[in-house]
Length: 186
Image 1: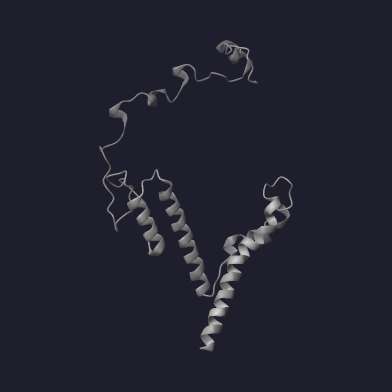
Image 2: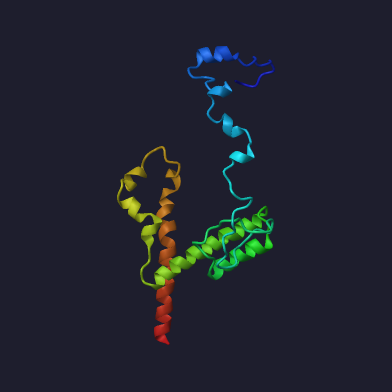
């Protein structure tokens, strides 16, 4: 409905809506609503046998927000912070509140540092992984044909994709080649 100076009509009556829309208002009556008992707070029905769950032990000092005095009772342990990216993450949690953009920008920077480290490690092992950047998906599963569909929003900048994907690898390869060449001369 467009915004006009006239007063909009009142909402239709329940009976009119029920007659016009099949299934409208099936849960208006609380007797017909299966979730109504759950909406009533009853401490005896909560099912919890504790006030606060037992605290999971820390295997290393965890990052924790400066807004909270303690860690949550359960937390993930699969990816301990390590290296430069871990130091950036620890600094972010130690120095900035979660409400500050600097906190989140440092966490993003830490992710980029970790990704760059993984790419460098793959390159040093002489096993670069350009497949992870989507080349395998382009070569099979109708990837190239899907790029020419008209409803894609990225059609205008598709020509940049090979450059964005290949440029870092070409630059790293060129830098490695020059470094090895200089070392051999010495």
